[in-house]
Image (cartoon, rainbow, N blue to C red; front, side):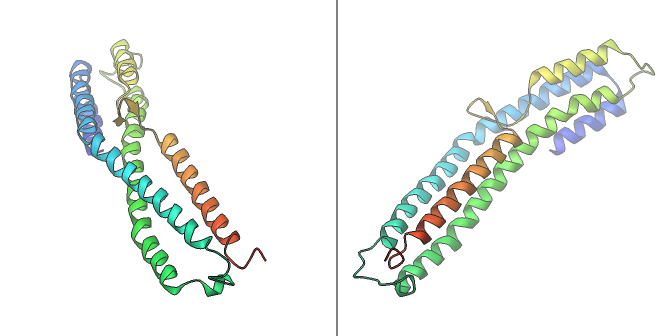
Length: 187
């Protein structure tokens, strides 16, 4: 984010369109290279967290849906299972919070890049209100689509927000189904 801020500050200090286009090329290349460097690790961590969540959810559902003769009510659940679930939640949810923080931070880079053309367009270069070189630079920045990419897909805040909504709905559904199907409550 700081590189984008510095680019904008330098552009308004120097007011040189050709130098601004060259520096935007360098900034875009830096963003593409850094995102391609971390994308495999990023995907591995997110996929591992998702797999861990699925496997643990299957284990929790299996332990809650134990035969009725093992537990007669939700209060009679094995204390070690409750401790295990509490430890799991205390260990896994901070990891998911960190993963979503990283997703939102990466998406904020893309959003900041998408706001640069409006900032450049608002500037007055060489004392002229209408400047065709400035308009060319604005179009160039817009069409470059700089930002954070994962496997060729541009990561935007809208995409991450939809993903967090999906995760929240799945978590809510899982927790309500677990509570509703607890042993002793179906009697």
